[in-house]
Image 1: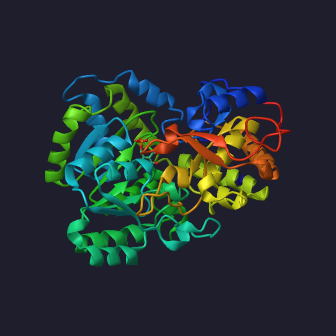
Image 2: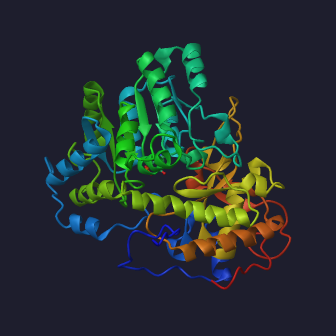
Length: 479
Ligand SMILES: Cc1ncc(COP(=O)(O)O)c(C=O)c1O
């Protein structure tokens, strides 16, 4: 007889802890009012469980903290850079590694070095910063996600896949010259943290190579994507996440990377490329913006922590535990009758706020309203991924709806335990049971780009009861 455990336990023990931000209902209502009902404007101390983002919010390992002490802070030729560069090369195989302070800087450097106004960059789904960086250069960000990826409850193993036929049709329609590069976001954050299969990457790569179009991965969550391939794509069960990640990168010509996700660090990123000409252009572009090419936007100790993080993130035990967290939380929320994007993605549970709050139209931002209400009743912070964040426009400049109105509960890496997740599930169940109390939101301030970060709102209509929102009897439990 052998013991066959079914619980994928945390492959670590906890050495250092920090208290949660406990608040009363009245304190949360006051905080929300001050924040203009936008959870991005809350103070972190006002938040009990922070699922706003998985970006830069995770816990580093003792090995990472230890490595930071030997960081080499030399301006040029830092030993820590060489270590990080070797680790990135080992995983991606790309020749040129340019460190940046985070992912969006890598995007900006690449795009501003190689794109011209009027061109189109297709992707499965561009995430907010990628889209904004393209739009700032008058380049169109075109999403070509497969149809299944836009249907939240539909079960499909790789809902992050790009629609290859639509890519071919686009190239035929506008011509190769207007498409200077193709991107793929792995996993697809804007579409539910859904993975992309190796078969799909191979097909996109073949189209790009046939038309001599460079293919770039937005690789923030490459390790989670590799684990999904191992678990779901026939033929890869016996391959290690590192082998699968290498196979993914080999199909592309470079990547932008926010190391704040699968780099397991609090800050950092990089741009990695094979092409010598593009790399030289990007290096020249980065020097006045980010810094000398052997530190970019990072301190030597940041690069040390990243070199270790990139090793740790590919541990299959870590990745099993990681994917299980989203699966567990998603399962509990689904069991409470709340619609979510199925199957759960790698880093988050995405609630279908549009379906849950079917009394609110898209332009009342059901995801953001749900986010404000969830915080108000429980202290849990989440993030709208819908018409507010995507900020899509009709050709006449008026607002256009996003494909779905989602609320993302992003799970920081190695941070929260199952009982934290149980609490979140209870809070979501409470909110769902009181959903008719939730009113829509109306802007009182809206910035021209990336408006979700700084927007201010008021509730639409008359409150049904007292409170900042439409909250009356709220108290999931005293938190
Ligand atoms: C898919 C994707 N791409 C790019 C970025 C930008 O990375 P950063 O926040 O490090 O600038 C993010 C961050 O959330 C992301 O999820």
